[in-house]
Length: 151
Image 1 (cartoon, rainbow, N blue to C red):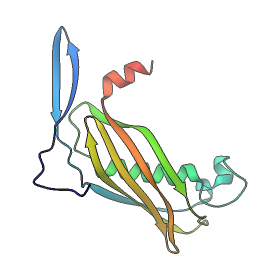
Image 2: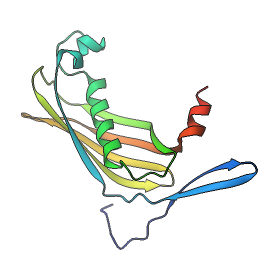
Image 3: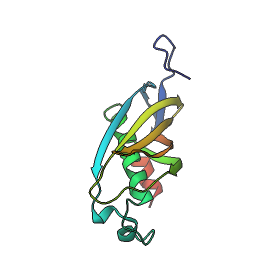
């Protein structure tokens, strides 16, 4: 669905209880936000270095991390105090190899917001064309509560 600036956007509510009182933060994150990041591929970025393969080309996990970085950058400064986003799901196709020394540009576009879930379309290109495409889903969380759950 294309971004419609006249469309009413539902605020995102993050709540937690403090001494019996429910604290609710309201954050509005609108679809249409976008960002990009670049990486010059080094030996440390290869499948061989990350132990995900035996070749000296950009590793799929590193390419995906670059796309996630662009997604985080797209919404930087849009969450409330004490909030962050965390990865929830990924669907990604790594279409062709990129050699050491090449520059890769990852782009992320926020397509949709449903409650606390943020849905991004991501892509990556090098000087020869499209390298990877996919979807990234992130969720807005209260940082303190999220970290408590990790203990």
